[in-house]
Amino acid sequence: MTSPPLALSTASYAYLRDDLCSLAGLAHVQVEERRFPDGERYLRLLDDVFDRDVVLVGGTTSDEDTLELYDLACAVVKYGARRLTLILPYFGYSTMERAVRPGEVVTAKTRARLLSSIPPSSMGNEALLLDLHSEGIPHYFEGALTAFHVRGTALITAAARRLVGHNDEFVLASTDAGRAKTVEHLANELRVPASFVYKRRLDGGHTEVTGVSAQVQGQDVVIYDDMIRTGSSLENAARAYLQAGARRIFAVATHGLFPGDALERLQRSGLFQAILCTDSHPRALARAGSFLQVERVAPLFLPLLRMGQG
Image (cartoon, rainbow, N blue to C red; front, side):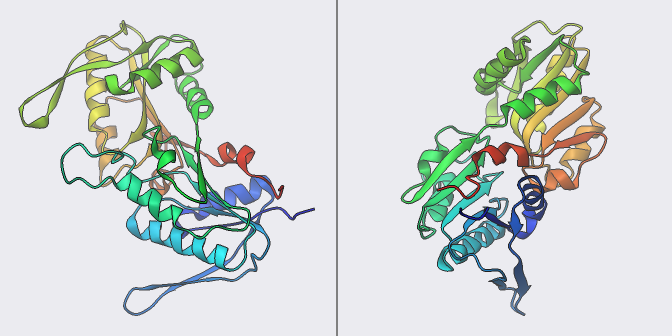
């Protein structure tokens, strides 16, 4: 019988590696990491991975983290791993999945090509990606790497209901019509009404909210988006729902990025009772508190790990 998989991670995703090891009984591969005087990184696997299934947890949260993930993956294969499974809770640049203007770089595709160039292990390479911004991104991966879209729907819908105190009387909403189909699907799962905002494009590329699509008077509203970055769209949508008579506003998202003072600005706005996201991005976990509630994503990946099976 093949031994259970080994697990390792990039430095920023050590928390998720530890969650997986705890939940699934995986052994942790130790990695030595240090810096040369000029800033270059030294990496060394301190445990033998030969003929073992290996789970590598990381994300493309920055260019440096992407290269750390790539370097470790290549080393795992070089030193004889039987199978390599990449767990990417957050796939960065997913909003650059297509070119809109001439000359734009489709960075989601170039990142997928980079990871696709990892040498194949004897049983092949897999990538598990959580709640992607675009359905087509898994098809950007090529060659010996097979990508799978892992959906956090069950986690997010349960969180939405819990945020409003298990109250059946709430509206699930989106920040714009572009997310209307996803929100409608989730609303059907929850058996609650769905709503989205209407926008009008202004000069200079700006937009303004002109209305909402459903009756929210006196209702709690939970705004869903796959990602919260600066939160400006979220703020505009919240104002529109409040102006339409909503009682309380909550927000849920899979990925919480919150660069700079984005989270503080959202809290200071006074628009939201609470925001909930997952720990798919390390920054969300670091900023968790009473206003920002954070759910663990490790359980979502467990059913897809082969656990040493051929």
